[in-house]
Length: 316
Image (cartoon, rainbow, N blue to C red; front, top):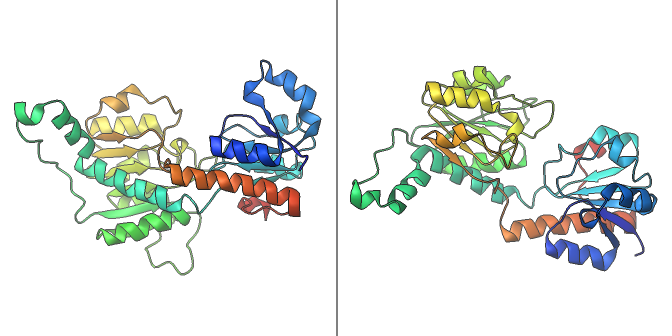
């Protein structure tokens, strides 16, 4: 297939090998002058294999004949879908194949945060078990908790199913009440936070959800509350979160994502009941390979049949 595609940033080696076998791949990240490279080859580009690069009108104008943006990941807030629709460019993502992995991580992070398992491990590693005795009893327990899920999509539902197995009551908030869902629905995020003591953020990023978890929501969550975020860092007002933790407005947090990652506020790292992970929700070899395969499949299907395998919802 003599189709030229652009790879703005490196991708998994397995993905690169498969793309190289099927297409002529132009690696923008290898160019000494990326802008000059785009000026030279931009007209030839018909597809983009994307990993966390911003796509908007300004970018699309540099690849005017692009037909498809195949994005790696279920979230795609780095892609302006309105701009892509206006330019008649298909956008795909990689849903489903990472649902279980992320849901597993979410439950693990919740338990780690509430039972302070990371801190307890560090206590042992630092020699404190022999030097100072057992790790202090944790003030929080998973028993009797109510989990509020912000974003009951594929991943949110998988988390809810797992939470039920742990004996947790589940509530949810989203844009609207979902048919066929028996969990109690709350019309506002503040109401959800008030009804639960563990708030799980699974919502996507973007302007609509930016800083949705603010001081009002955290105050509603209460002094026994834990915030768990495996969605997008931009959904949480980190300044408000730090203030709430320092003041005891909530008890703790478990965070896999951050607003300006990989930068993490030093104050967050200094707080005693904060568990942090470096955005590893889907980061197993098997799951990332499956995500990468979907990128390849979307590109090959588009140029072979004119149809995408997993278009984003906005594409109809």
